[in-house]
Image (cartoon, rainbow, N blue to C red; front, side):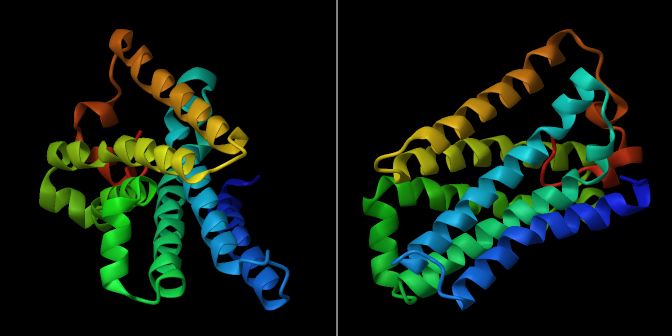
Length: 213
């Protein structure tokens, strides 16, 4: 793909699952429980995009690919966007803004507790994803905050595993993918000279994102 088309192409690709969901809902092609299916689809794409953003650095490290580095911020923010839609669907459509029931759900049902924790973890990453936030916080502090993306990914996968009642294939694949990405990210770093972006130099700070890897 030509460089000038990379970002628009990725932007459109990230929106397609939402468009498909909207079309299926309008045509009444969802399951007998459309709210549950909507939440499931939005949650699936949250994890897919979050793990895709985390794969950017390993792909560069092991294969020398660099194109994905230009869009990982966008992909990470789309992950947050889908997470927000997932949570809003639960809040508005599933629970009808009944905050007493929502609070009880979060406390009593462990998969909702861990899912809520994952969403809350993503919020400061999205809020501080701008160049202005990097300057305001300082790169080192900003970098520490954005390491929470790994916590959010782990919590998100656990949420999916605990949510599923029968077919564990998809959550198992997500868990395996995350394990590989974490191994690839942290193990080689011990014997590898850090890049300028990893040593705290602010020159490339604006290229960092919610999906800092």
